[in-house]
Structure formats: structure tokens, C-alpha cells
Amino acid sequence: MKKEKFIPEVKSTLRSRSIEIPKSIYKASGITILGKRIKSLLFTTDIAIIKNSNASSIMAVYPFTPQLSITQAIIENSPVPVFAGVGGGLTTGQRSISIAIQAELIGAYGVVVNAPATNEVIKEMSDIVDIPVIATVASIHDDFIGKKEAGAKIFNVSAGSNTYKVVEKLRSELGYKFPIIATGGPTDETILQTIEAGANAITYTPPTSAEIFAGVMQKYRVDKKQ
Image (cartoon, rainbow, N blue to C red; front, side, top):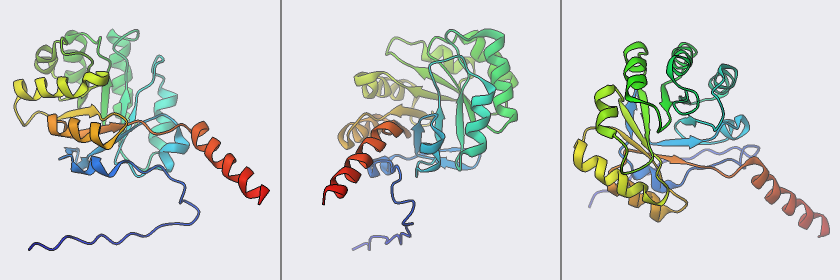
């Protein structure tokens, strides 16, 4: 009988209130990017959350025009690799490509383009930057073959409740070698379902600072009454 590995754990009293990713994510195979094995990506731009998490990387994508000052602040303060959003929807074309170049120069491990990014933009971006271009796939109808042929090195699947179905389709058509990142959903069950569908790494959305603070303040109020 094979003996299970024991992993010693050392904790800090002052850092006990940290964001720990679901252990089910460790079931993923991971993707080795620039020498780092990535299994979990924390979907946040909150530097306080980033500094107090055990995720293996950061997915710094946000619903505004990408700004170098934001990307730089995240990269400088993150203890783990950062994958930076560079547009592809409202912000596209040469502007998006320029943002990708700058993100690479300040240390991003990869650049993420939104689902609407054209194959032409992906092609030009991938020809210029040396880090991987990660193309977002939001629907089973996305032209993922075209995105791959244009130079996307990794797919980031974000299709809501249909994510695992999209992952299954990508995996069946692209084979087992192409790297796939996917959102895992809110439970261990949905995370494992996505991994079993073929995702190599999982994006996890943490609670917000406000949500965490609400729990802390509630505890303080209860303690004060006692």
C-alpha cells in the first residue's frame, strides 16, 4: 500500500485571515509557463487580496480600459506570476497590442485578450510579444480554431454555467496537449467537473475585501457583547 505523502504546514498568527483557494483545484494538472507550474489563478485586481492569498498566480483582468499604472502596481506587489488583461473588446487594435508589449516589459507572465478580440489582433500581438497570448473563449460558438491558428498559446474559458461543456468541446477538438484555463465555479463539485472536462488550471474568484470585512466586524461586535 502506497503511503500518502505528509506535507508539513507552517502558519502565521497575523496572517491567518488569508484567502485559501479550494483544495480541489490541486487536482488539476497545471500548466508550466516560463518555468512556473500554474494550477490556480486568482481573479482579482485587489492588491490586499493578492498579498494575502495562496493562489499560484493572478488573473488581472478588469472591465475597464487597461492602464499600465494598474498592471504595474499589481505586478510589483504580487508574490506570484501575473497574467494581465490587455483588452480586445472596447480597447483593441494597435492600442491593445501596445499595452501587451508594455505588460511584457514590466514582468507579466502572459497577456489576456477578451473574447471579442479579432484573429488579426491576436496574430499581430503573438508575433510581437514573447510571453503567451491567452485568448478568452466565452461561448461554444467562438472561433477557437481561428484563435489558435492566429497564435493564441492558451485558452481562458469563461462561459458561466456552460464552462465545462465548452472545455469538453475544446479538449475533444484540440487534443490533450493544448493548455486550457477555465473558471471553476463556486463549489468543489463544479471545480472538479471543469477539471474532469479537461481544464489544466482553474480561475478562482475570491470574496471581496468588503465581504471579508463584514465577517470580521460581525465577529468584533459579538466579542464586544461577551
